[in-house]
Image (cartoon, rainbow, N blue to C red; front, side, top):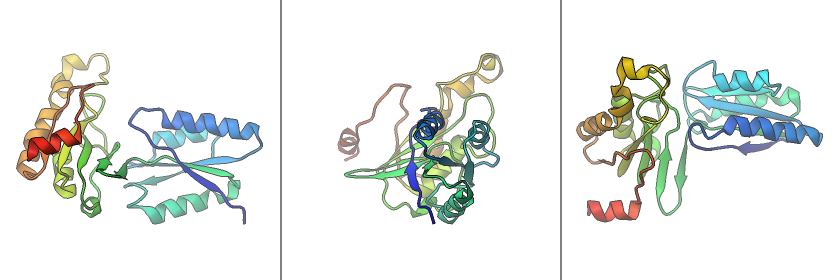
Length: 218
C-alpha cells in the first residue's frame, strides 16, 4: 500500500491556508506527485472543500469539531482519499493548542463542541466572538457562546478575536454595533461565567505579553 505524507497547514483566519494548499498541490503536480486535502470546520458542506474540489484537488472534510476531538473522523477522511493515491495529504485544522513554556489555545472559526474541558492547563485562549457581518451562521461563536467556551476551557487569560476588522459595505446602516461591541460584550459575559479567567480586549493591532499579564495578575 502506498504511504502518504500528511502535512498540516495551520494559520490565522484569512491567512490564505487553502490558497497555499492549492498552490503547493499545483507545484507538486508539476513534479509528478499527487496531492489531496482534508478540510476542517464546525459546520457542514464546507466552502473550502467545495473550492478545493472545484480546483481539481481531491478533498475530504472533518466537521463538527477539530482534528483532535474528531480523530477517528480524520482517519476516515484520510482513508476516503486512498483511491487517489496521494503522495501528500494536506490537512487544514480549524484550530489548535500550542504548548511550549506557555500553552495557547487558538480556537479558529469554531462553535461549541464536546471536549473543550479536556485541554488541560491553558495560559491564553484566543476566542472568536463574532463574524464578518451583522449576523452569524452555524459553527460560529457570538459573545455568549465564546464566554461559555471560556468557562469550559478555563484559561488563565482570554482575548476576543474575529471581530471589528472585516465589515461588508452597508452593515454600518444595519447593525453597526456588531463591528464595535462584541469584544466588550464577551468580557462582561465571561466575567460572570468564568470569573477566574482574566479577559483583555485588544483593539485591532494591539498586543498582550503573557509575562506582563502574569505580573499584572499577581
